[in-house]
Image (cartoon, rainbow, N blue to C red):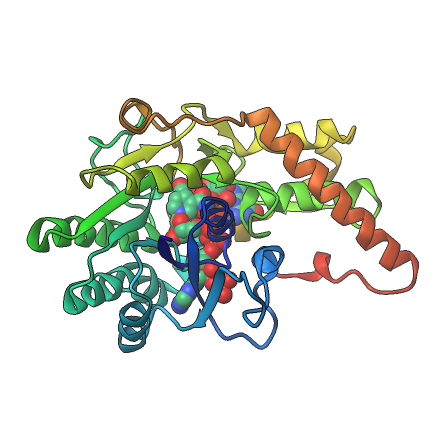
Length: 343
Ligand code: NAP
Ligand code: GDD
């Protein structure tokens, strides 16, 4: 039985990847952070009590800022595959917390690579690189495009990308960079724009709120489905030689278009509810992301299965169900706190 170690297992991608690996018969070990509230919602459906026989998902407390403990964990687990997904992953927040973002999103990668090197672990390593690294580079962006990072988050990811390549060249570690364009799902964090829109629009539909405050509506993104994208991560680690791949749908749409489609699907007038709030503007913006995933198609045989409209349908349907549950609570006299959150 193959063993995989995942950082970021409690995140959007970690949950889909853990599902995929468990279905393939892997034993999955995930790094989780201690938190005063539960942070395992996205993987609770996968978890079986370790005291029961047949448990294949094991969770370990740790943090990407603590190298000694990462080393101990990797030494004791000795996984054949490591998927490094953990990060401070929010671009806007990285302007508020640049040092923390550099530490976790940038140096976190180095800490794992150093652990692999020092232990002498024979393992394959996946680095969650990002299309945000392309920044100001004009579209379409491919593996050959020069990075022009536009945020502390992107700069940290560029460091991580290069250090992964360096450890591949210098120490022969099987390290790959998956340069993934934006990917979304019903499990997407609620402060990323797609989920923020589907959550708010469905709550508006049920009368739970009236306004949705957004920033730059003209930015364009190449949005795919997270469930499709984690398959590409796995495929990259099944290759004989380590290499770097762009993963994208090859279509780009504006934030405005995404919001208009969501509101139209719910028979709502977008103009009555969407309000621009400059607090969501970024000091520097990435205007257009559009990926060329030709290399992944040819080498990995990967292509996305879910298109833009299907992604919107999936997210709206899931969030409408959630809003109905919230409405039941509100009608019973319990406050719905979601609309009060700072995002
Ligand atoms: P996400 O939902 O924000 O998940 C991030 C994960 O990292 C969470 O499990 C989080 O734990 C964990 N984490 C954060 N800080 C940590 C720390 N100090 N120590 C240990 N773990 C920590 O992100 P995602 O969308 O799944 O993305 C996965 C990875 O792909 C990230 O590296 C992201 O930067 C990258 N990426 C994402 C996209 C995309 O469109 N989704 C595109 C390209 C690249 P908690 O649950 O406790 O917060
Ligand atoms: N979050 C957010 N909130 N974004 C908004 C808002 C808002 O209210 N209004 C407009 N936007 C715009 C942002 O300015 C940006 O241009 C676009 O919507 C997408 O923002 P996010 O959904 O926050 O994603 P991102 O593109 O900045 O970053 C995501 O994708 C990267 C890959 O390109 C994250 O998942 C990163 O971790 C990932 O690397």
